[in-house]
Image (tube, protein in one colour):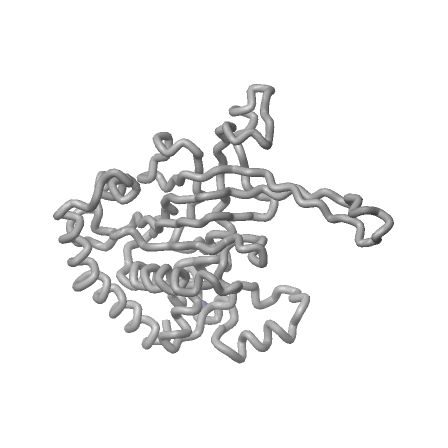
Length: 288
Ligand SMILES: [Zn+2]
């Protein structure tokens, strides 16, 4: 993005020591292995993809919290006519800070509904206006293209043994569970707004800050294995005023920021960000 138009492509920096995404991390092990793959070899250079689903849920939850903080209600993520396993929990959500998904729009194809619905859609075949991409990771930093929403990350397969508790068994393993994990992840998550709106950027900026502040809270960690310290994410919206080469520089540990970047940081913090937040406040106040 150049100049001061509203950004449609934005990048969130994501750093975490350990990320466990159930069993859904996809690796390109078959390329790297050449038949000799050894899961324990620290030299293995396996890259992969973190799907957007868990990232999206994490971000959405952060955004819903921000909408609540500004006194609004957010679209419930579940279909209103779904057969919820826990109906009473759903009803309680609605009594609190949520409205039924899509209740904010008379005609989803014609009007935008609340800001959460506008961004995430998913009702009556209406796509959300924020496209969440997966994050491609690679252990070799020089192969990581941050401007395409990639990250440095180290794939590991963790093995856990569930052992017998009976003293006679001498902790004999009963079951072995393997978990896919990415360690030392640092990179960019690329989000694209299908339509440029000030309040979208405002909500994203606030939600990313919220998630960073609440990163050790169970509810706002990312992925699985949270009881084991996984999914604690340092996150930061990369200044949308940056150009590509400046974005790359953020990840270059050998180089500090340029004067131009410092100037953009100031302009972002003092002028642009507050204007985007104002737009968000106005929209939430209007009940939309
Ligand atoms: Zn809504």
